[in-house]
Length: 347
Image 1 (cartoon, rainbow, N blue to C red):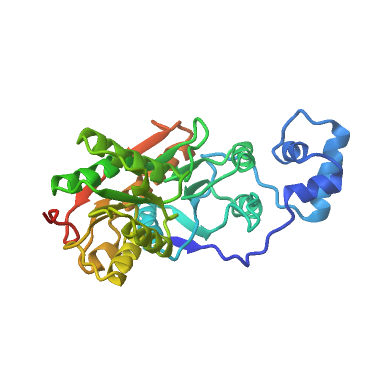
Image 2 (cartoon, helix red, strand yellow; image 1 turned 180 degrees about the vertical axis):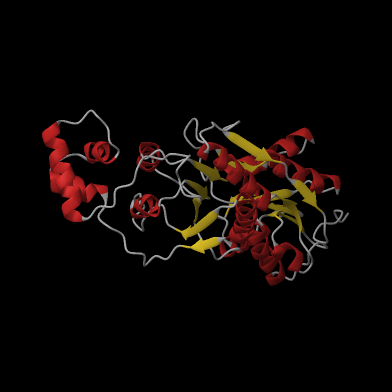
């Protein structure tokens, strides 16, 4: 069963508010809440009185034998089919395990770019036994908060390299970039461009590295002006493709690091009166429903999103039972799905 968390759920006072009321630090207030012994009696009294006065909902330390069968899935957005595939995988695995899942479209950073804390407090207030983070970018203080409250968690396709020991599940992005580029090379293309996501994200960097490795193995010169970044945004991808078409030697093929961005590439080519794949071959990445609906249908690299999510939940279940994950980084294989958007290079 999946429940969606509402942003309007009333939240009690945070631990920071309690600490300020008692005149202590947040770590000291946390020690009292969690029953730690290393707190002076007078300090414990002040914190306890502040907890009662403010109506703070105290939760016990995580205990796998007593915890409710409830986990949180924290996603960046619920609007994309990417998130839908992840939710589907979590939902099926949760049903098999007899779990309930609360889905939260929570921002881990505010508009000013600073770490958010409110959603973390809600995790404790709900009594969740564990958390799955999808495409989340957590700060050092947020990681520390999770460890402090002993909440098991697993990252699904983390934006950046997680701290040592943090469990994560993703796709074989380097291999996917290699496979996509090798496919275009096999069709006789040498002027192959890549439109990547964000420069600093793990998945995007790995896909570009795979692209470069395939070119090097084939003895094809790597061209810096053929590498563009569009932040996984369709409109930006359209603009990057127009820039590529304005080069003295425009590419005859392009590897686009997401299906959504590939749609922007299609739009740019149509604006210039060019046809896919007659004039330019295009390979995407993800294998979302949009890839099949595109015209022509998009050749793409399939990453197993639902399987990634299900694998992450199973790993989380082991952690909730008190076991360490078998591996802190699990990568599931990708594969090329050939459709109608690629063709042999025109002589």
